[in-house]
Image (cartoon, rainbow, N blue to C red; front, side, top):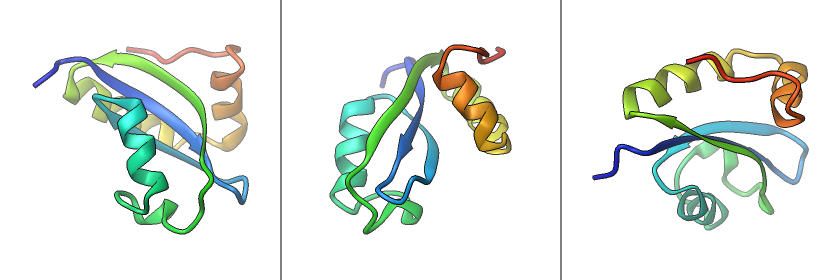
Length: 88
């Protein structure tokens, strides 16, 4: 199994953002679009990938996911726009 974990943010058709982690961003977005995975995204396709970044190990990715999920959408927008960065 890969040690390369990614944090990603997708936007659904309602303009809502979802933050998750995975080892394969394209596969995970495809799963979400097919209604598999997070309940928060089911029935809300199409999905648009707004951000993805390699973040290291699974534990590092999970910690960052927890942090980013608590951020306001405005701060996530700053991350997407490159105005702020993820802290390791």
